[in-house]
Image (cartoon, rainbow, N blue to C red; front, top):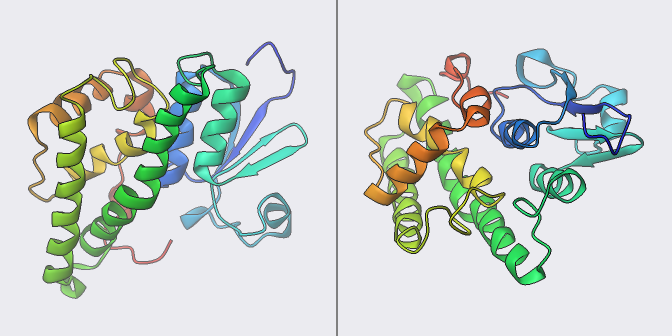
Length: 221
């Protein structure tokens, strides 16, 4: 636990939830101790009054730090980076910080919707209900996004700079499931090298490269 606080961080959300994995990954990168409360999916609890008091939207993840409750995964990532990270995760320069923020926002508003559409339409849809054309549209969209990342990586090893940073977490979290869901989803060369580098990180191995078979064919949260 960071020496700046005697309060143990509390994280709410199931480990197989995509947005929760982003937060788990960063918590491990920052070597922060925390208590993990399994909420959502088969664990239930999203409509419990105690949880709604933490997040009125009834969604995970939620991070509680003392008297502060933070919801929305990227708000949590930014909070953790600013509160507990060093310049690797929260640069002092607003200009440099904005580069990280741009990739985070692009990942959330552009890449993630298409990735999640592919994951839900293919992996989480019972096979007899799959729409092949819809799956292919989502797949082509994802391929465009990873080609864009590949082109950017010609200039540097990671998304924002030549070292791992906060910018890599939202987009990077998509990669394991994209590669392992059972579709032929080869990455372009530089994007594949980026993914290989992420796979060497213990926090990525522990929090993202984890089984997700319980989600196969499961249409509900």
